[in-house]
Image 1 (tube, rainbow, N blue to C red):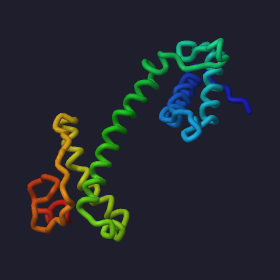
Image 2 (tube, rainbow, N blue to C red; image 1 turned 60 degrees about the vertical axis):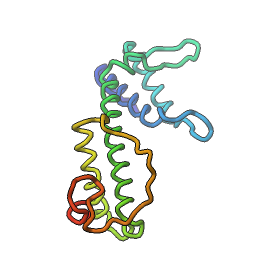
Image 3 (spheres, rainbow, N blue to C red; image 1 turned 120 degrees about the horizontal axis):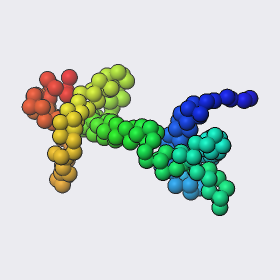
Length: 178
């Protein structure tokens, strides 16, 4: 099979492959327990070589000692791919933080059996309520008001008429307890 690409299309493919390989392999340390996904890494190196042959040397460079093509600092730090990488990391950080905090709060509001009895839709809806306060907080203040509470409390059963632990000021039954 032959794939004919313009230089511009090859540049776009190069950026896509770089981002895909980064997503698959960047967090791996290459050990036996956490191996690099070699098939993806090999494909990236292949596309890097094709980019080098097409004189896209702003994006890739050849290492004579290793006899392999690698992404340049420009591709990793200044290209469109680098901007997408930063944008992805930023959005992923906030989304993951909000989801983890919301899941934590949900597990404090409901016993495991109660959560297991909920449908996926109900559980997602309840977690969405828990996530919302963090979405608002982080949108408004970032992490400026995030603190670590050194007190370790015993999980208490929340009564329907108690103030909601999410801090909304509403009764639990009118807020997260719906």
